[in-house]
Image (cartoon, rainbow, N blue to C red; front, side):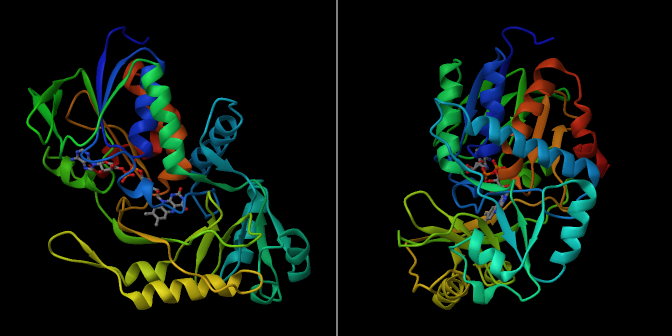
Length: 367
Ligand SMILES: Cc1cc2nc3c(=O)[nH]c(=O)nc-3n(C[C@H](O)[C@H](O)[C@H](O)COP(=O)(O)OP(=O)(O)OC[C@H]3O[C@@H](n4cnc5c(N)ncnc54)[C@H](O)[C@@H]3O)c2cc1C
């Protein structure tokens, strides 16, 4: 049972924090969302945000991701929402993709194997000469989300339900007394009292938990997302190819990233990032190779920073052991999981009943 009048502080202005905050407020909690800078200023503001369960995931992780896709479909159908959520499928080729297709068929994940001629007929924005002769994997139920627009809608939901948003409050720290959270100290020195705290600070989570004596392994990486200006293209699906991943973006351009280009991003000692122009040009070139007509692409903006990734690659969601009242949300694929994770975590915070859907993802697994 939700206890009326509970005050919950949610730290982090990305999709996980805002989704959880909106769900908490909708269930009657008093919610304050705190962000060091602007909303969507972290990974959520520079994410490819392909909505998928395309990997060879353990059954419980696959199930959570599929629920994540379902929540997006329901959100996309809301007549009052301005979030940009598109389900035009995902197309993938490269090493291991045929085995992925067979696995997906075995577990009932919607999947089709398309030859180049099928791709030409069904996905006209894709360069057919880039598709391998032996074909590509098409997942018709996949899509993408523009996270800043989703965050905008979730903030409106939060505020409509009576929640408050405080941005630019500096680096927040969880305040603990006697083994229980009592609130949050902002970077500007205020202390906000709370009965419960949700820590959703993306790449900063392992540092914050370490300060409370809780170890969460960290595999956070550097990341780079390029955005092109609008240009004439017919791409609809999300493309994942050996050298580049890309999708359409609101306004008519595309966004793109790749594993190899992430590895070329350098994080300086002062926490700022260096991106070589050759990396940017190389990534644009790779995108051109997989788009019909091989357009010459330019870069409108580059989003560079950290991509939160737990050390074992799996989500870290739920109550933090040894710190009563503290809940954490730290995950790779936080776009796909954003809505479902917020929903389940809000239920746990307010009802005190652990969700069986999150049983495999507890921070307690690290001992
Ligand atoms: C290039 C790229 C591609 C991606 N592709 C995909 C994909 O295809 N599919 C997918 O599902 N996911 C993808 N992701 C991952 C997904 O975008 C992230 O998992 C998700 O956005 C993380 O959300 P978050 O709320 O945990 O963190 P963030 O969005 O990073 O938000 C954390 C917020 O907390 C704030 N903060 C940090 N520390 C503090 C503090 N101490 N006090 C106050 N505020 C603080 C930050 O400023 C930030 O606003 C990708 C990410 C990147 C970067």
